[in-house]
Length: 261
Image (cartoon, rainbow, N blue to C red; front, side, top):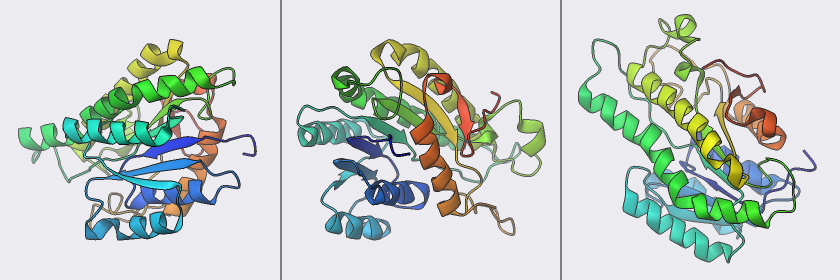
């Protein structure tokens, strides 16, 4: 972990849950990033108060308004980030924002499917497109060889529920059809990004954080997630440190295991 250092990182959906804890972990590193872009839909809303308190105490935390389904919002956030970075580029983009409304084969509607797809797949696509010039700049300006988060990387927060091969093991327990389909598509997007951005020196990977005790994780009454946010993010931070060429384009767990598509 000692060799892991990013000058700049951006985390979407950082006002709660895994995203907020990631921001805290980056702040607490012995060699924290010079700038941590923490994005959320409504920085002035009640649900962003803890993030605002963090930013008030740590000058390297910059809150950006970013709605992943709004192209204008994404473009504005990218321009603000570029101005703040002053030509140094963005080392690490973590597409963490996502939604998981209840849905089954019987209840899922066209509106449900399209709404979840818009946030969980189109959002990461558009956000990455907008910040790609900054990621390229970071990769070009780095003296590091090979692929790593310290150089330039796109990390998409996915899930084992998006693994088609693993579906027979999990479907009856957690149906959430719209979420599953969107995350399977996100995994495909990650693979496409890994092929499209490799020559630019940008690492791309998808990470499964486990079933975490967050608002998203405790979606089903009477069924409790098995991981604390602290446990999950501890694993995710270790993975960010260790990601390299061998993980490029893969779906990996918070524990470092490779999941099948």
